[in-house]
Image 1 (cartoon, one colour):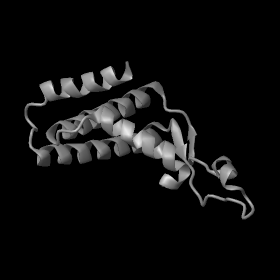
Image 2 (image 1 turned 60 degrees about the horizontal axis):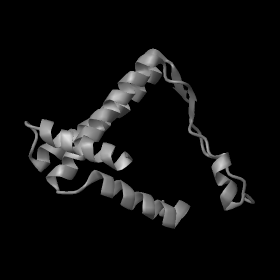
Image 3 (image 1 turned 90 degrees about the horizontal axis):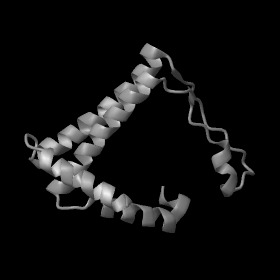
Image 4 (image 1 turned 45 degrees about the vertical axis):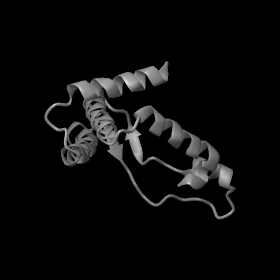
Length: 130
């Protein structure tokens, strides 16, 4: 079912993408969409205030086991996106997914296959992937 959704999305992107068919157009639009996500999150902090960013050094005890490290890590985000900010961030993420699917089309890749391969790498390598 999920592969049908992903394949359907990629097919729809292929049908709708008319103006930006060049790989150069697609990668620049993908980069622009990434910047728009960052801007939407920043505006949620600075304009709306529904979330706050309180960042400092991650503190991990020297004797912490690797399996426990995740419990010491902090996202540095407090609060929750309000409905408006959530809609804006989701919309910008959708645009980014659109251009990612478009890049897959231009390069003759299947987005679902890319996701499956990455999932397999994550499962095989676990935390050592990063």
